[in-house]
Image (cartoon, rainbow, N blue to C red; front, top):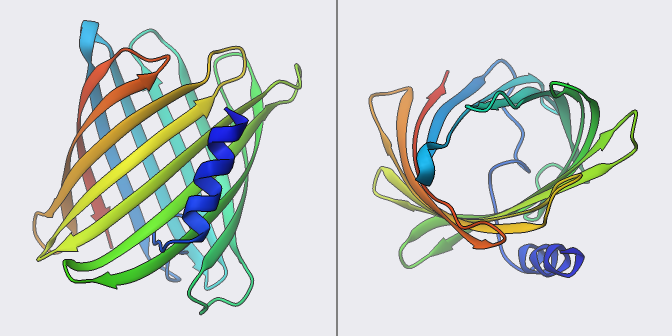
Length: 212
């Protein structure tokens, strides 16, 4: 798993990006609500909220819950690393959260860069987090490597999701999605996911994005 995370890190530093490494403009808000339904009747609901406090500080909430009662919620702050206008963007994230039985301290690093191609504007990004359980000192790791492309008013997104949860098995998933505007401030996300390593599930995702 450590080798896989290193490979993703190197890949992202040689390409381009836009999500976590880009901070929200001051006074603007982004909300994402999603439900992922998997094989065997499993389901997971998630919410992400980000608000631009200042040009160099974004406040956020990352939360979700499963049908079996498991849930997590992490409040975080994100700030840029290095000059804000350079092509390769870096951002540092620190947060505090809870699960049903544990308090977590989160640290994260996002790397990204945008690019222009013959098919349109695109981005590549690597978002990594480490969640440290305060009482047990166990640490879970996650890394999402994303490639995205703007096509007309829509977005095509391909994502590799990798993780090494505390007390669990390392996993890798592939999750493509399609995002299209529904009015001025709303977008709809339609996605699929398939486990590649230590995860046999197949799932479909429906999400709503709001920006204002």
